[in-house]
Image (cartoon, rainbow, N blue to C red; front, side):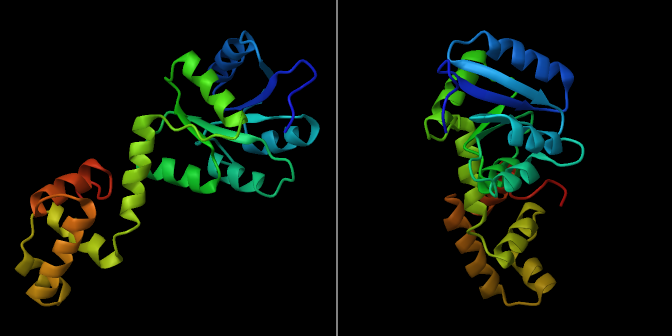
Length: 213
């Protein structure tokens, strides 16, 4: 990946909101070392632009009509000289962060991120580093923890959040009380909490189980 003739990092903005595109282009256009080479409202158009323009860093929204951000990331994996990608979105759910990073995003920022931090993220990602603010990294870690829970443990964790006892869970799943107890202890250990009540609370707070489910 090369900077342009003026030594600037070439940035492409992909967002379906015109105000966001104009605001970002205006803000980044005043930063030394950065050049906004274009902006577009769709993933399809972004992939077409990449065939015509040299781009170092892509600022990518996640939720757009047509091709969404995750689909764009997966398509970029097939390009020989794909730009590095920073997801810039309004969504900070565990699942969005996890899917974006799994699909190849090197950075993840919220749209209310301060201007200077966006510039720092672009520079860091351009130089081959990953940029995840602390709270985003924490959410990602929590989501990764969920992948360590088995399907049965997730099922039982969901029942714990509803206040079911071990006996009630055993009856519902047609398994022994002892088996339920072993699963509950395993869940408590994996979530690094002290008891079943904390496990239920952590499951909802971390987005592992949705309230009401």
